[in-house]
Amino acid sequence: MMRHAQLRRLPAAAMRRLGPPPAPAAPKRSFGVAGEAASATGSKKPVPLEQVMPRDGSREDLKLLPSSPDCLKLHVKSLADISLEEAHEFVFMMNRYGAVVLAPQTESDPLAVYQTMDRWFGRCVPHDSMNEHGIVEINPAKPTSINTANPRKEHLPHTDDAYTDSPAAFCTLQCRQSAPSGGESVLVSGAELVASLSNEELRTLMQPGMVSMARRPAADGSWMKVSSIPMFWVDKDSGWLQVRWRCNDGCVGEVNPEAKPSYEQMDAVARHEVHQLVVPLNPGELLVVDNRAIAHGRRPYLSEDPRIMWRKNYVGNGELEAQLRTGMCAAFSSMFEGLHSMFDPWEIDASKLKAE
Image 1 (cartoon, rainbow, N blue to C red):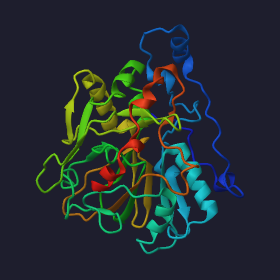
Image 2: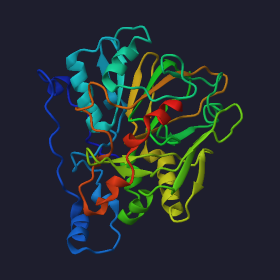
Image 3: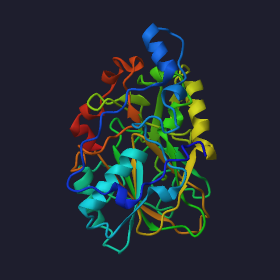
Image 4: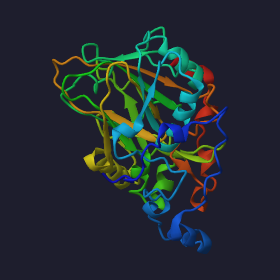
């Protein structure tokens, strides 16, 4: 896999801290020789972002998936009653990998789990198919989209809420029933997508109107909601690069000709198994994903096999807001100057968000 082979979870004892965790250290402003040269000379020559965002572990602020799904697993006593120590380990792993699998040692009321999640991540991002608890059941017997309706076809990597003007900061998936064979979750680091671009291609994709993405319900396949916000943007508060992604899976509409080669290049990266981390989930386990840094999908499985997941997404304004950084990496570079103000999802009208 083209991920840093030495990214391994530290022993639990090494990650434990006493009291509240310290504030994240300021990221190193290192972008490789090519990036520095282009910035210093004002050269217009495109800079390959694989040099600016090396996936070899040399950038401490760059979120990269590990080479093994076991490295994402955090064992906790109970999802309904996570200890302070376990919460600190969760923060450490999320800021390093952008994804964590919470594996409980004891079974809890599946709804009680969301008391913890609601406290950690704040307000739920609404969905037209959610229940009174804000949960969307992903079940091929009761499909909510054209992609969940066909288990035999893989659900290609995507970030959730890409069809809205305010994509969720965090996505949670609780496994209620796993398929006997197949159906594993698939993760792709946004850094892998960006590394396939040049800085000029990235600047193009940081404009609105480059790629439109839609929500298409299983019932009629209509283009229910469509958004053409930028595919990448820099959060003006944190200075971190964010991603909105969807493979060309039937829910991608118009692609601006200026962005088409770049989009197709990233689409090929996201589909390639060498860039994917396959994550099996057992019943009761909960996958938490930084929806601004990591794309997720699903492997195919037999239509007659049962598989039920509970999805609930969050704005990210909960107790852990100050400790968690959403996005792929810090964007301290001249190539991003002025672009942070192009798009700010938090300035979207709240009444519009609630109406969705």
